[in-house]
Image 1 (tube, rainbow, N blue to C red):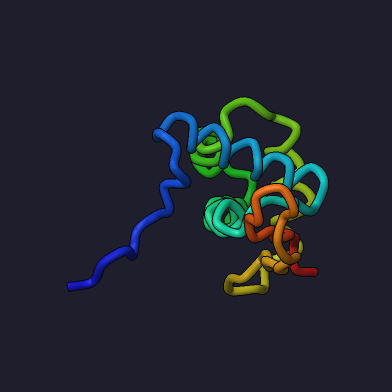
Image 2: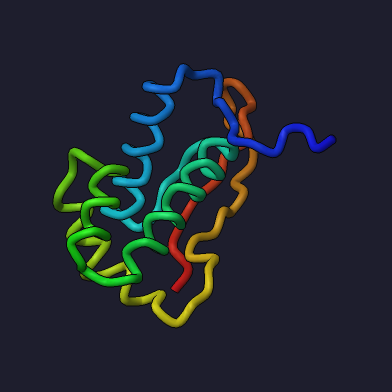
Length: 119
């Protein structure tokens, strides 16, 4: 029996977790990097890589509709994803982002990490 192979819940209810991950992906698309806790970075990485894989197919109606379903409230981020980020990774099979550990946060000793695009 395989245990614990699903998503991390991040101690949040589903709507809050969904909003958090969407906002972090938007920040990653807009600024190119994201500094957060390691668990949040890994979950954000999953969503970001899924979006890039979808966007690599091109700017077709159904693909745009599927991406908008995942990022419904930031059109500028979707445009940037299709025009700037996805064309960089057309020849790449996966692994569009990397998580770099940054040590522990002083206040609560949470493990921090930086999520960024692989160039």
